Length: 389
Ligand SMILES: Cc1ncc(COP(=O)(O)O)c(C=O)c1O
Image (cartoon, rainbow, N blue to C red; front, side, top):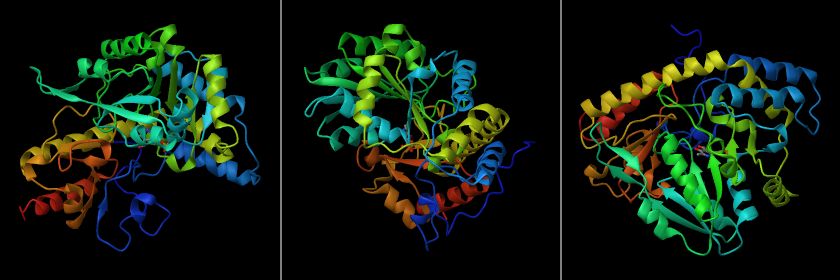
C-alpha cells in the first residue's frame, strides 16, 4: 500500500487545465497532452506554500541549493557529474528545441530526427526556416517480441551537406522506448562522423518503468560526445509540474553554450521563483513519491496491456512500454481515417498518431498518467467505440 494517493484526485474540470479545457462541457476523458491528473508530490506543494508565504515574487535567480539539488540528482541517479556552469535555465524544453535549431543551424539547414516523434521535434526547425528531415523507425521482429529499431542505412542516406543537428528523444515519446547504451553509442558515433550537434531531450528520463533498464544520459557516453551535446531535462513530467515552466539545458562545451545563450537573448523568458522552488524540492525531496508513482504507472500500463489484448480487437501495442506514461497504439486494423476523432466521439480524447509523423489512420497515443478508475472507464468507452457494447 503506497503512502501516496494516486487514485483520489482533485476535479480538474472548470480549472485552468489545458488538458481538460479541450473537452469542456463534453463527456470526454482527456487522455491526450502529457500531464498527469495527480497532485504533485507533497514535498513540492509544501515548498511552494512556504515560498508563497514569503509574499515577494520578484525576478528570480536559482540559489545554490537549487543547483545543488539538480547536480546531486544527476550524479545519484545516472552517475553523471555535471559542472553547475554547464546549466542554462529555460522556461520549457520546447523552447530549448527551438533555440537549439537557431543556435546551431542556419536558415535552410537540416535537422534530422527519427519519426514518429513528439511533434515539436519536427516543427521547431520550421519555426525559424530550418528544415526538418525525418527517418522512420522500423519495427524489428525479434525472438523476445517486436521492438522499434533504427534503419541505419536510411539514416546515413538522409544526411546531406546541409545537415547540422540531430534531435534525439531519450527515452522516446511516443514509442515509450529506453535507449540501450550500444545504440546510443552508435548514434553518437554517427553524429560525430557527420559533425552534427546532438540535442538530447531527456524529459522522460526519470520515468523508466522497467527497473532493469538504466537511463543513459547521451552526454555521458564520452567527452567528445558531451562536447557536441545539448541535453534538455526538467522535473516537469515526472513530478507533474509542467505548468510551472522550469527546465534546463546542460551544455558542457563553453563555445556551444555561448552560442545557445546568444540565441536566447531578449526572447526567452526567465524561470520564475515558484519554478525554482518546485524544481529544488522535486530533485531533493521527492524520491519516495517518484518510486510510488512508478509503481502506480507500471500497474496502469499492465492493466491497459491486458485489457487491450482481451477486450479491444484491432488495437495493438507493438513493442514493450519501457518508459513514460504514454501508450502508442496501432489501430490501423480498424480502417479509420481519423481514429482520434472516432474515439473522441465515443468519449475518449487521444492524440492522433499522424501529428507524430505516423501514417494517417495508423496510430493513437494514450496518456495513462491518471487514476486506474479513469482507465477502466476509458477501456469501457473504447470497447463501445469498437462496437463491442
Ligand atoms: C519529449 C518531450 N519534450 C518536451 C516536452 C514538453 O516540454 P515543455 O513543456 O517543457 O516545453 C514533452 C511533453 O510532452 C515531451 O514529451
